[in-house]
Structures are given as C-alpha cells and as structure tokens.
Image (cartoon, helix red, strand yellow):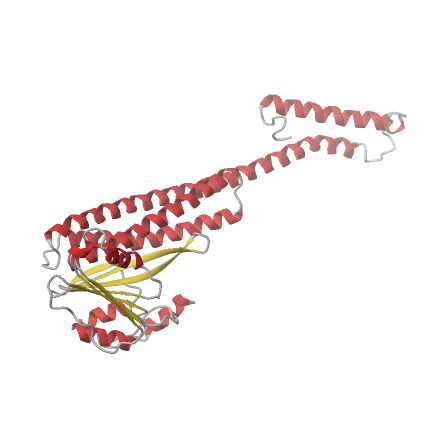
Length: 363
C-alpha cells in the first residue's frame, strides 16, 4: 500500500518545474523535531524544538561545530524554511523530500550533499525497513535529515557529550564520517542476524523442506536485493569522498573514509556470498522435493508392479467359464492365493537383489 501511495505522489510531480517541493514517501504521523547541537573541545550544548521559529545560529568560532538533526521530513514548508536559512539549492530540498533516492554524493561548492539508506530489521528478522538519511556538510555545520522520529544518531550524541575520541576536537568532516560509519556498521548487524537465519534455513532445506521454506528463501532473496541496491551505490559514494578535492574534507579525515570504504567492500562480499548461498539453497530445495517425489513414485511403482501379475491371476480365475477344471478343485482357492503370494515374494526378492529396493527404506 505504501508503495502505491508513493507512486501516486510521484505522479503529482509530472510537469512541475525542477525544485518543486513534493514529499515522495510513506504518509506517516511523524512529527517534525529539530535537535541543534553545538560543540567544541571544551563545550557541548544541545537544544530540542518541535517548531521551526528562526534560523539556527551558527557560531563564528572556527573550532565550533553546529550539528542540526531533523526528524520527520514530510512537512515541505519546514524544509523550505530550513533551506532558506542555509541557502540550500532547490534541487537539494527536492531530493531530500524524495525518499526513493539512490545513495549519492553531490558537491555544491560551499557544502556537500549526501544521500544514503539506514536499514532496520523487522518482523522476525527477515524483513528490512529502509529509511533515507540525508546529510549536508558545510564548513562549520552539518545537517542530518531522516524520515522518522527514530533516534538513529543517539550514540553519536552520547560520544559528543562524553567527549570520547577525537570527535570533539575535529571538524564537520569528522562528524560526517562518524555518522556514515554508524550507518555502515548497522549493515554488519543486519548481516549477522540474516546469517543466523540463513544458517537455520539451510539445515531445514536439507532435512525437512516445506512450502514455507520456499517462501522464506524467496523472501530472503528479496532482502538481499534491497541490501545490494543500498550498498553498491554506497561504495561509489565513499570512494568519491576519500578522493574528493573539496576543502571541506581535510586530509586527516580521508584515512577514516578509506576505513569506511573497506567496510563497505566487506559488506558487499558478504551480501554476494549470501546471495550465492540462497541461490544454492533454492536448487537444493527443488532437488530435495524432486527426490522425495521420486521416492514416492518408486514405492508406488513397485507396489503396482507387484500387483500386476496378482491381478492377472485373479482375472483369469474370475472369468467363470464352465470348462475350467481348476474351478472344481476343492483346494483351488488356497492354491491361487499361494501362487499369488509366491509370485509377490519372488518379485520382491528380485527387486532387492537388483538394488531397486532396500529393507527399511522403500518397503
């Protein structure tokens, strides 16, 4: 349903000028919330507001960083006012409102615009919810925007409050690295959980495959496709950041972006490995179902083959012609039953010696 709503929203933009602000995404009840964090090596100050009253004040101190975190971007008016405060390009605001953006990096000179996906596991660790994260990195400020009120960057604020590491001593480029690194680390958490699910599913496919097993395989394959679509563009994005000639990215921070790039490559390798495993599991499932069907058909064929001569004997002596001497025999009935039993026993022994059946396996 949400996808259909998104399509209808996208259709509303047909014919509109570039930069027209139309929210494209799931209609939610998320409230607008803006958290402003100002910090340097000595001080840390945080304010939270649910109303956009005035432009955030950016400190003139070169060592002070202002981080503006915005939750809930479905209100185009609030976003337009924020863009006016920081002189953001209309196309940037348009891309922020379009939550179906492909991860990318745009250099606007005075600031960098980054789009990527934050993923969360839901519904029994098999389905993934994607949330678009937009970052605007300026010389003395960073703006992060995401769709929901889920506090995805809480751990970064805790590090800032505790003054752990070099984050309080560094500039906006290092803060952007910390946010990107947190998002990339979340992919590892997802892959670990999915790895456990895939391992259990692999055992089930080999031992007791069911139609639900097939559904679960297809569900996980769709999850892998979503992961691949989110991570592959991220590889190019991080590569551009570490090779960027923008003065906003300082040389000491480039090494950290290279580390994030290595993590992204590792994630891609894991995703491709899981995709290969799931494809192999699908083949194993089909083979297992086919083998079970073959075993059933084998048993039915053997039973039918054994009963063919018995049916023939019963048919011959069931014709009731008068000129059949066996019909008058006092022990004819018992002789016919004995003949049938002997034929069945001979055929079973023959099948067993041929290796077509095994005791305790087919019969």
